[in-house]
Image 1 (cartoon, rainbow, N blue to C red):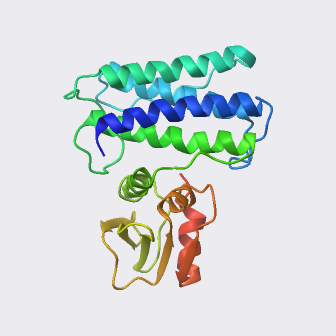
Image 2 (cartoon, rainbow, N blue to C red):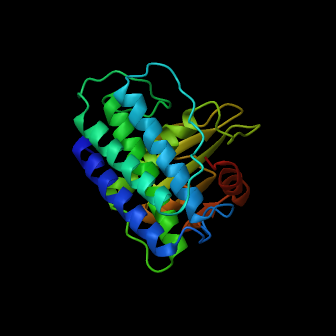
Length: 244
């Protein structure tokens, strides 16, 4: 996907999140994040937006901790979230294409700016889904191509890091496949971080599959996996330990 597409998605999803949060109310529980109310969702996402904008705007070249969310509530919190989202859009939209800054996972991208546009588009989309779940009613669909991209980022980015908790004492192979596109991944599990390759495995002991939009939400622990085949123990190992 092009960086302009990610920016457009980030803009739209952030505004949808704010609208859903307003419709749900700040006291509403977030069923997809059981310990949160909507106010916690806004505080978290707004903080991440400001943190990411700072990485790019200040061209950080080393890690910076995510700050604590502010202790604000009510209209002040809603306005603060909207302001942070707009600041992120303006920062990423106005940054030079060759900006050099820190990134935190190894998923292949064309530049640090592309990394942050992609990462914040997916961050905001998943939390938009959370806000709509709190509000109730139908959720906004996730585009098929964008969902495939998000699955790829999760598998070849987040779970390539040493902090991934998906480990196996013995080498095992898990397949991940979308049924409405030709996208598939081979996830090799061992005592180290998972190693994911593009393409369907020939030696998988289990497979997680489904339409791209549903598989995207499932792998981000928001809905059940549409289809699980093969070794249930291996599938359960992934589903139990893959939360980010």
